[in-house]
Length: 295
Image (cartoon, rainbow, N blue to C red):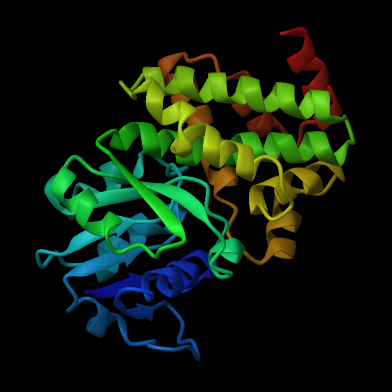
């Protein structure tokens, strides 16, 4: 199958590598890259099957200025909620792509390990079961692929786990121990599930690969950019300094702001996400810890 990947960051590049085991894959990005099968955006948009790995906070603007629907079949590979509006990715894409033509990738998948062909399992989520099965068939032998129709559940899990990962990074940065880390991750899973219930998400999305699987991965390793954001916050650095040092997008930052907006509007109890937001806004992480232990 001929596949086009839009976004040549670490994740887009890793997906292009993985999908090339069975398919002919081309890739493009905002800035030219010296890499195999790199072509212009104009050429990519002639391909029917597309994988879009543009960060959540940038995709709305990108779609507005660069995209016209031509019966493309799309798999969205980003995870996040738009900070400025609180919109989920499926809401953003709905203006440009019919629901039957789009699916969303979720599950534990560090780009570095995918590039090494290390085994993992992921989920392709779509209201169109035929489409999700089609994209699932494109994946390489080292990636076990499942399908689901719970798009909103996968989206919430994939976005929320990045915020919990920031909290876990703070916990690790203060060397609070494994008991604290396990407690935080477990309560984080409950919190994201509670949030998901407000949108009709299915419980199985949170206890499976999209939720628990991705959360356990992202909230336990310095390979996670969001976990490293937490380390930086524990060290007293500002979010601006941390982002500059990372040199990459950490989706959990924007998602924390989006969750704060949604929680305020809908009166949802999100203690961990709320404290992460407050820390990003300058609150002392040690004060947040005290508040979490007494809430």
